[in-house]
Amino acid sequence: MTAEQSQIKHEKQQAFRRFNARILEPGSMIFMLVGILCLCQPWVEFLHQYSVLIMLIGLIGFNVAVHIPPPDGPKVDEDDTGAVSISAAVRGNTHG
Image (tube, rainbow, N blue to C red; front, side, top):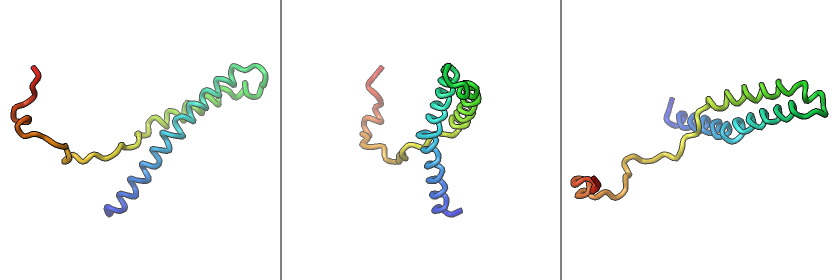
């Protein structure tokens, strides 16, 4: 696998992780809440009958969504630490 292919794979992975964080995870929470509302409302029997199924689908979706890792943050160059004074590094901190 070349570096370019690896970069494309990484971008696809990050796009799916962003989709998960923005759509799937909140959507499954909303689905569970809708199931609770369907369970508590007394007017439409059809919604009341399928409320537990709606909550179960939301719960399973949420369990899947939270096990997908979050998207990576911006990459930080570890070599770029900013301005560092050699005398301050040798002397150490002034506390304690």
